[in-house]
Length: 204
Ligand code: AMP
Image (cartoon, rainbow, N blue to C red):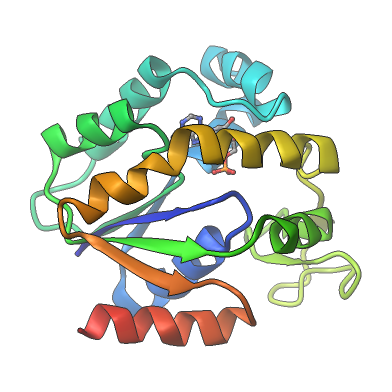
């Protein structure tokens, strides 16, 4: 199975990807994680991407597509995966369409205000990448690892990221609806409840 997880930043794509990986054995390809990994290792790609990420802007299409192209070439014909955070623009979606056949696009729907609330309290585990709430935990509830706040999870940058989502990424809803690939899910509530909705959608 090859899926795209679509939705605003903070809609819960990464959290659901972890569940889907466990349940369906799908590889998780997150373009944001690849950029953060590059940045941690001070690669030219990471340093270039940082300029855009810190401002809540999108990294230019050409750079992202080249990186995704390299990533996709690691997978065989029959390997399943989920793309999380890619595509984010129509040219990226057209590029993806020219490369692979998708089985579905899950759209996580949630209001901007709920997202701001979620992201201003988001913490991520340094060890296992689990996402949790900074007000509820001071260590990772899954593995006990140290938690950190993402640089771009401050209110100003969150608002910029949401603006970019509405201006550049939301058009993908129509793009995929027109191709009969869109599966819409209510992304409010607890992660487990949302996952139950995702599984129901995928079983249809
Ligand atoms: P994410 O972890 O998906 O929220 O991505 C973090 C940041 O990485 C975004 O705000 C962008 O600056 C950049 N980024 C990730 N994926 C893409 C993409 N498909 N196109 C452009 N920029 C991206």
